[in-house]
Image (cartoon, rainbow, N blue to C red; front, top):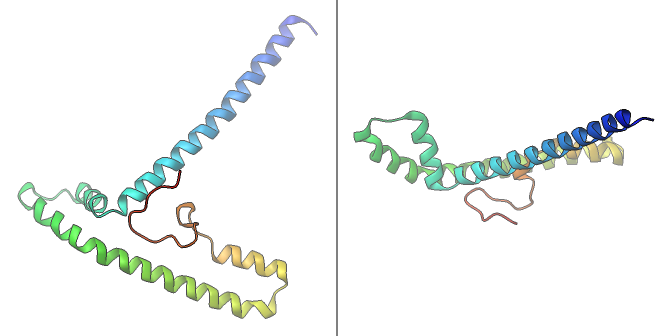
Length: 135
């Protein structure tokens, strides 16, 4: 093997390693940014800010709209939490009905599919609202 071929293999290897590191870094960065945005949205201020940016009310009505959104935040997120609890209860009841009909492996797959959640909701006992990040 001559020097030119060795150089090509080394450069190709470095390029592949760089692509892999870049993809992993980008994925981690995007995931953290998404979790930050979701976490921010769960706070009253973040919720109001996000909605205000989207609806862009007239400047003279902005403060009134913001106060309404801040006031309603707690009620909305209580409703989200209640709905999520109902969904979990319903999912558990479906799994109980399937249990006598499925093998252990099938039941595990069904449970995993039925209880699938986005990554930010996979922590047990997680509630809506602002929560400190676990580092």
